[in-house]
Image (tube, rainbow, N blue to C red; front, side):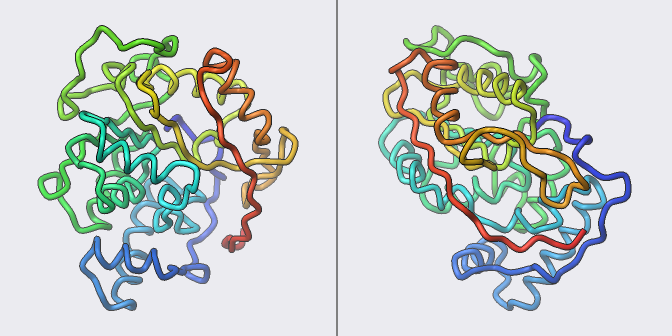
Length: 284
């Protein structure tokens, strides 16, 4: 994840547990991952880790408990395809970029994606470490490689042209990665949620080019995720960001971005859907 310091107010809003809630699937997942069955104790545990994370980087997504939600598993367009790749393709590498605590990648592994073929990345390694605390794991019990870095830094993720034939580089050993660059052309599935909309339009174009260069040319390889959108592309106010604006694509502009601007026209299929979501945000 690239630097989001411009999205953080100088005086962070206080935390509140008023909007804390887990639906049935989230509760089941958190219980299974943490081993904490008592709902009261589980809530106390989550609130404690939330406070530690907010003290490091007071992001709105931390304040509204986004790290307890299961965004990836609810993507109708691609989640089953992701799991299918894990079952049927040898060495199907799955990258979760902007992973934060790692809740989505942990859900995919729990649902059957081979843990040996998973890698995660974020700007802030502290969040990945807090993910171990939240889910009561260790690097030994949950050995997914984590690669810290800025997605806009070429030393971490260089923009290269998309691959239309297999790369001539070997598949890297995930545990030895120090950047994402050795993954160029080797990644079968890339998940990025609540990530693109952090940035301006030109930065979103750059980020799309960077991720496209990681994707394997094998048929069925996918990039999937969810982000803020609009019926017509443009700017909208950010939630609880004291007047800041968010650039959002529309389903049509999102499809045009990938099919024609990033990849050669007609070489990819883009499924994009705009869904109105009613969510409770903490007060400013």
